[in-house]
Image 1: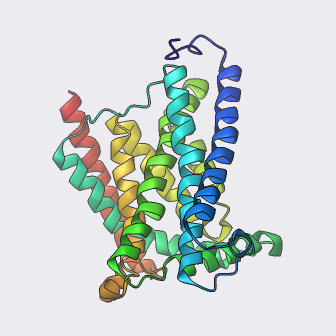
Image 2 (image 1 turned 90 degrees about the horizontal axis):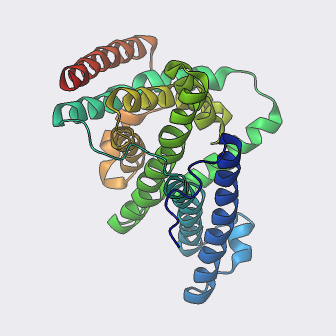
Length: 290
């Protein structure tokens, strides 16, 4: 039976419902698979993982493995499956040159002071205590995850916290949602902002909502201008990989590059530098398309 494009002619509501169904079923199956593999091949008790008590590195690694397969099940598999059965173009072609790629990477390196300034501003907002509970749990989990003693730990973290999130989240948010919202609203700039809002909200870390929103907007425009999902995927990976790599003991001397503090002067310089690079990137892509 040929499955490619079988839902192509269905209504937008039916397609959206299909995507949600795929996400629901896939994330459950992948989470159960992860827990089953842990029970089969390790001595880790699932109660230790579920209780958020991490007495040993092996328990932390088990939780990372669960998160890895859960991310694949929530974002990667259902979005790719949806694209296949609905004949939806996720724009996975590589339609940009090396100069565009280098500009996008430079943007990710130079944007950090501005993002750090937004983070401090976001932290100063008076948020309800029930919202901050999510942030406290996320911060605790991040500390455990970023405890690295070997290159193996670093590599595993890059896979779990950088590679898979970059691919999975960009597939869903820029590849599917941004394109869908552009069709619905008829205004790509509105679609970029709405997608960035959802992208930030789904992380459930409200003290980092504004900086993640700003990153989502940048990633959205990288996709919009280039017409290739690979550009925001790479930029997303660079952003996550820097935060992870500079917490590795051998690279701590460079941790200042991803600090969560910045003066307004540093933020202003970062904003202006990124703005200039974005203009150059857009101009480069316009010349290429022309």
